[in-house]
Image 1: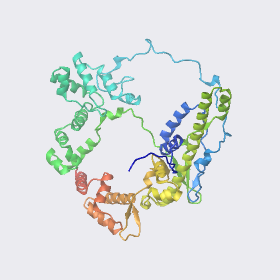
Image 2: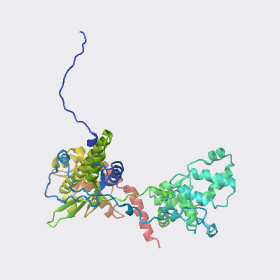
Image 3: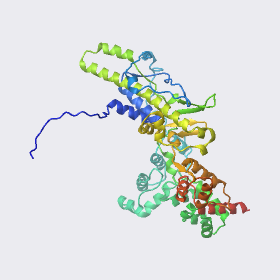
Image 4: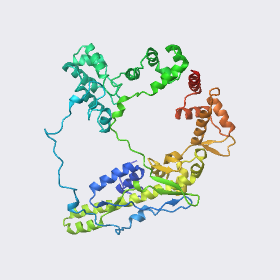
Length: 502
């Protein structure tokens, strides 16, 4: 059979992911913090984008009323520049005054080191632990600042700098002293002595090589490192298991003292260097707010503080395009206009999609809002997608990194999607989160003499109509960081002994 070449015409359909469609999908899954950063970047790149002084208005949606959204393609087919206004700022309004900040030079005020006392607690204006953390300084900079005034000779200073470089962000020394001594060509005894000096710096516990040494340094600083505590730090695995009986036997004290010693250890900082973490903590700002309506229903509205304030400056586009002569300038302005229009419309569609998905979630979980977690229903993405006529992937993107403020607290939208646990008779299903809450309540109510085992919890839940396996109970308990029945019995036994101690 001979092979030959030929041409064919075939008709087919395929989805083309245009850059604009990719941008719309990307915007849908961004959190409000990430969206704000993205809009700032677009404002810098696109000269036709301007800030809107007031947030775009989107009316709250009652959960009993379903408002269909306009398709994105139809909304993009129209251009409305009625809200465009002149955003130029007068030249005389650029600065509050014409004074420039004074340049730092030799006349700049220097730190008066004579006010620093010979102790670990620095009382100068700039060298306190609180001021260093507040200014965002690193742990290494803080330690080097203390080294600058430490009474060490030149050789010990070089060794101390190498030790500080080997300390991780948690404050632990992550290098072998023998290896460091060989690399520096210094005696091991000098390296060990320098480490002792370094461990006297703030924060207390820095330079420790393991958890036990870190806790010991802090206890020594509090003058609480007695022989019994020293023995306890060598058996931290028993502390983790709350084995008060075994610890009392090893330390030679009674159970009440063991309970007090464990409480002292819990008050210590296992990672003293984390106070110098420079990563900013972002507060959670809700994207959606749910409040009770006047008719007893629920009103779902978007948080106006998280909505991007962007508009297309059509007046500036008309002014610039009129003076554009060459083809490249006109093409550039056209691309900027199209991108600006698409971004504004995509942001509006994103907001309406979040509102639509949130309203359906509230409609499905109205029992939770009214009565609490026990009335949380099993829910999955397909149920919401079918109810609002969207794809599951769209619902998944909408619920990622989005938060809702309700009368019962602040929750991530994904919190309301829980697996179903069937009942004993199979007539209804229970939410996994509701079952976890029941397990937590059972354990909170147990007494010292009736600690519930996992098997006993299974029996109680089965009696209430919940069909659940023992391994599932153990998995839920471990996820909530609740100790086993054996550890809880030991802990409650230690508390009972402490209450009887005079």
